[in-house]
Amino acid sequence: LDHLAAMVAVGLWSALAARSAGRDLLWGPVGFAAMLLVGAVLGLQGVALPAVEPMIAASLLVTGLLVVSRLRVPGVVAALVVGVFAVFHGVAHGFELAGSASAWQTLAGMLTATVLLHSAGLAAGWALRHRHVWLARAAGAGVAAFGGALLAQMA
Image (cartoon, rainbow, N blue to C red; front, side, top):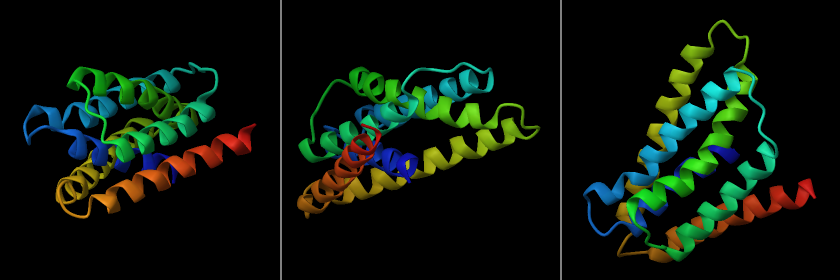
């Protein structure tokens, strides 16, 4: 659920904070997907990063707060922020798949699911940009609370 919530939240934030339907809209999702793949490849190679689970939980807290605030940042910054977290999500998945004969097929499916979840978040965020903004903010608050709860459990 943590991965699902993070990916939908990235799409939501991207749609809510975008100035237009142009490139601004896609920086976050593309940055996340690309760095998720980088992290997964690292995990497949046995690279272990410190604090993977706390960083995944922190990604929920941060992306949830970004949805609530609708913070606008330049596209490259959005890609970098979510990309850093995506590396940890990817490492977690890649590390779990290391040694599996079907690891690359599973990663392809994971990347496809990521794009679809980002798309769902983008669609929901775009639909809620001007009407029912409170609903998107409530969803963001829920994601942030989920991340906070996960962090509290780890303490």
